[in-house]
Image (cartoon, rainbow, N blue to C red; front, side, top):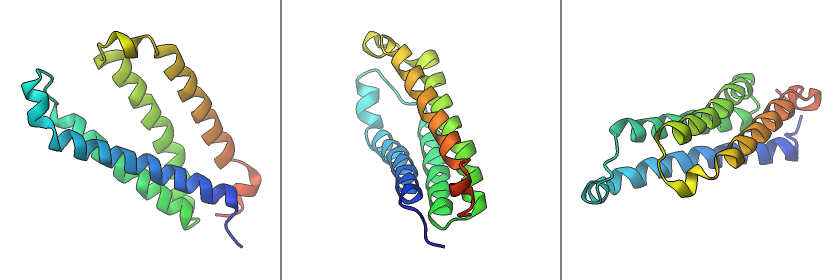
Amino acid sequence: MKRSSGLTWFALWVFALGGYSLARAWVLFRQRSVLVELGAPINPLVIAWSVLWGVGLIAAGAGLWLRREWGRRLALVCIPLYYLCGLVNQFVFVRSEFWRNRDTVMVAVAVVVNAFVVWFLNRRGIRRQF
């Protein structure tokens, strides 16, 4: 059975999320001395979390691309947790008024994205491809 175009695009999106997390970790790692000079030191755990999310999401994307059931299940776990951790980060650590004013938008986006992920990956036609 051929992989559907919807699943192909979804897997590419998951790859892109993972790539974004790895790129974020790389930039934070490379710019940590500049951030310290600016008075905004980065906790090494932030970099480690970005690497962890990047690896997890890329693994989920690979599983989806290869149409493995573990990839579908990993995506069902990783993507909602990724957005949940982003919201926790926003509410606990972000002090910028610019970003604080966007809390409701971020919650709405996270709810819509997570609802779409659960709906898409649990559709009968998608599940049959695994």
